Amino acid sequence: MNFNNKINKLIPFIPFIIIFIFLIIRPYYLFPLGGDTDFHLARAREILDNPIYGLFWDSITYYPLGRPVWHQPLFHCTYAFLWFLGGVRFAQAFMSLFQILLTVLVASWVSNKDYGIIAGYFAGLFALFIPAPSTFIVPIPATYVPIFAVLTIHYIPKDKKKAFIASLLGLWTHMVAIVSFIPLFIVDNYKDKTNLKIIALLAPSWILWVTYWIYFKERLITGGIFYSITHMKYISVYPTLSTFYVIIVLYTLGIIGLSILYKTKYKQFKLYLTYILLTMLFSLFGFNGDFLRGFQFAALPMAILSGLTVQRGYELLSKNYKPFFSSIFILIFLFVAILGSMTLFVQLPNQNGKGWDALNYPFEEEYVPLKNYIETHTNSTDIIWATSELTEKVAWMTGRKVSNGLYPEGVYGSTKGFKEQHQKINIYQTDKYFLINNFNNQSIAKIKIPNSSKCNF
Image (cartoon, rainbow, N blue to C red):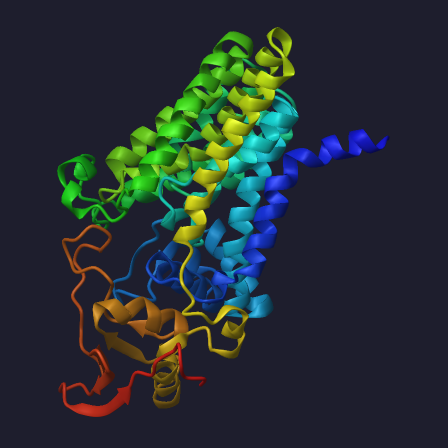
């Protein structure tokens, strides 16, 4: 292999290399990020402490009733395993880095394999066009659905076994996969015997989770199928100016890429279109006002298709015009791609200037004194009550079951029939203190909340 061939093989993966270096230099992932992270850490802690029961039921919060799991357990099992290997900080940091890097790598690899070097390079950049940054930065199962989907689409005509494995992993990762993976094999060719065998092999997992959620539907607060449309005021992922920029660019180029596929690779066109439409429709109706999640689920396929658009545009100009025009074309889209990809980096959480010094601080930050108090004054079988904003933090930090949840009854995400119960230890929070009360709600301890950006515990 000569030097030029080596360079050509490296070009599609330059965005991956750059993003890897950037993420390592700015280690935002050394701290928990709150929100969904607390929930997923609590689920991982429950599986770590009770590997069998924790797979199919969430009882570490909302005790004693508990609630059905919201996600298939593959992601949380991986989280728990990494926690077991290297501790909670290692697990969270690994998952944060891995999902971003894997997204960029898969975008470049698939686009390079299917469409060409330039497509691979730009797909890696466009993979950083994030409509909903919080769902891409924070380790969550949803990030892996588009990864498994594009791998399935890539392998369906090439390697059925790998397509099956990617689909099976998707079906055990997130509920969106329930509506979007098996249809890929039907759309590809529902008469093909191998496709039918794969559908038969995927069917038990599909039936298990569909049956599970139907059986427990009376326990889950989902707000109904039209909740997202009728409750837009509760949206939790807000669009910004950069959001509109990445959506307009990504989806314009992606739709052009789809039209190119329609004329050149019709079967692949059907697969991408099927996945994009199904996930966006499901997200529009199925989440708590987070309509941007649908755009996020489709972002990786659109990044790959955008890479195809740039590749075909460059080839067209190279064949019909002077090299000057094709060079200008690449420079324009390089500027557009870099501008859009930079919107991700401004969204990365602020570490209060600590950087790598974050390793000198506990992962739990200012909640360490509360964690220490609970572990000192209770045992592993004790039940605790905590105010809603602390329930998941207390659960994952200590492993104690909490007789309360993040959401009250009747709110999207809670469980029907649950009634919180005060316990021997009841925890409240003010601006400056954690307040510990007994069963009769009498104060027994007052713990000052330290400033985690200044204090070294």
